[in-house]
Length: 339
View (cartoon, helix red, strand yellow):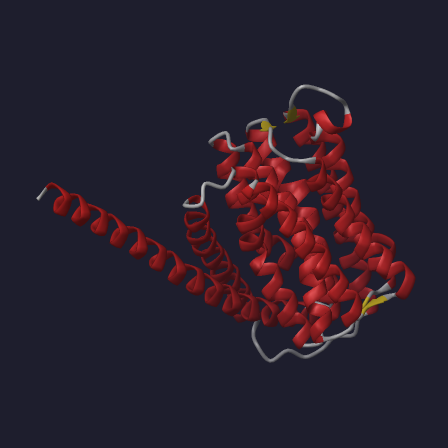
């Protein structure tokens, strides 16, 4: 009788666990669906907004779209920082930026060759690289300065927000210049419907991103993975899903400037705005980020910049190389987690 009861309890527990996993898988699928719909809606609305107000699609991608698709990173990193999970907060941003630079533009190149505009080569991509270098210098004290702990202090966070302000001012100047250079194009939709489409797109992206993140994190936690690994992989991929969907949709619609601007702008927002805001509210202590993660964090945008400088475009072969670099890095993370 005792063994029967014990077996019955084990069966019930196994059933509950399986149901939780099933619900989380459904959540992942639902999250991806909402993200794809939100990305499609946002790209259309942002494109109409750009044409109606004579603002270049690159600027829209660097600002409105980049900020909207960075909201999942902000939500995850902010609440992770508040509860003292610095590894998850910083790991989410680092992993997301690595994913953006390598996987998103690499995948976009499979759809259409990404021609890199001169301004993106000289200004936008270097800004993304600068964001990675600045965060590495400020945050990873044990690797770079030999200190006993890594910490992003409030002064560090304030400096990041100063860089964010300069980035916004730079885009303001681009907007003024773009109005003089671009011709007026007729847009059938009224302004309020365009803005509503952008807002609906952002809401779908954020809701879908949160559903995806929560479901995927629950599955990952069942495996006993560290917070740093979760942030660098599951959360990074989950919070980058809006950027992935937006850039792929933009590439399919031949809006290459928006695809590049979305990725570069999101990377800048993630470091300067998201971690700047999080660190200003509460200093972020990082304990489990490895030197390999720092190398990939800086190396991702550096590889993107190298391809852009040498060839002025990213074709399928280069996109495949970028994706493979990420796959190798992911395999090394998984191996370290299992070991």
